[in-house]
Image (tube, rainbow, N blue to C red; front, side):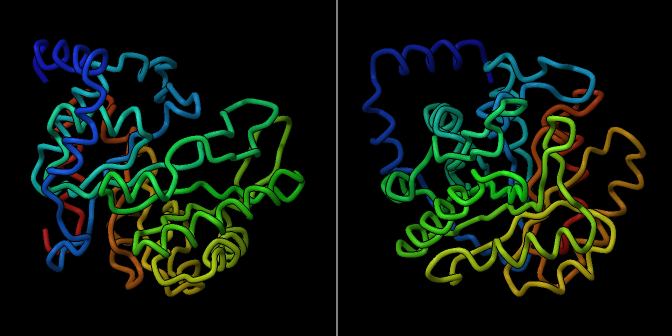
Amino acid sequence: MRDQDYRDLLELRAWQPERLAELASVRRRRSLRPDGRQLLIIAADHPARGMIGVGARPMAMASRADLLDRLATALSRPGVDGVLGTPDVIEDLLLLGLLDDKIVIGSMNRGGLQGSVFEFDDRFTAYTAEAIARMGFDGGKMLCRIGVDDRATADTLESCARAVTELAGRGLMAMVEPFWSRLVDGAVQHDLSPDGMIRAISVGQALGATSAHTWLKLPVVPHMEQILAATTMPTLLLGGDPVHAPDEVYASWRKALRLPQVRGLVVGRALLYPPDDDVAAAVDTAVSLLEGS
């Protein structure tokens, strides 16, 4: 992204907000089905929950210009199918002309801010199903942390169920990211054991009045074959951080991608902020793991 592109973006943001609806109406869209190949979606909704750090860099995502530059690089690489983000990020990309022929998934509930006393209160503070449909995007993603010790989970479950129903009613993907979780010493911890993951999947896939358009977003953990036996839903894998033992991490991705429920990867900071800052190389490595690439 050139400096002039960023300056033009700032001018559009200030003086031509109507351009967003205009650009959305003429954006070239594409099918979710990637011609027999698995999907690669770049995730960029972390900052909305206050998750700015990456690895040992606590403020890695602080610069919006730098984030957009990294996203521009990632979206330009062959084999990248789309992006997942909150309205601020998605609309920046739209104004920069980077969303033609890309799948766009709107992130919906970002209210449970990382490290806050209300972290389990995953309120819907970003996209709505109506807004996603109006902008011509392809679906909505929701975090569904099932906090077994926290009463806020009941509201989260009800809100996620409503979002699944509203998205499905418009023929849009409902991407549900379920976790079986609890507070440990004041911090949210997910149960990533097979039992914990299966419980989370069982609850998450049953949300809403129909599961016709429900997809799951699940982390790559040990015993994925046993875990995915709990669902028939199309599943996108949340890759782990390949900074430590990258060969092992990529091997785990490659193995999980061969399971029949899996339709691709959703990866964010691991590709946008690799240790050597070579975004193109990190993305190309992920693309190489996908079936048919």
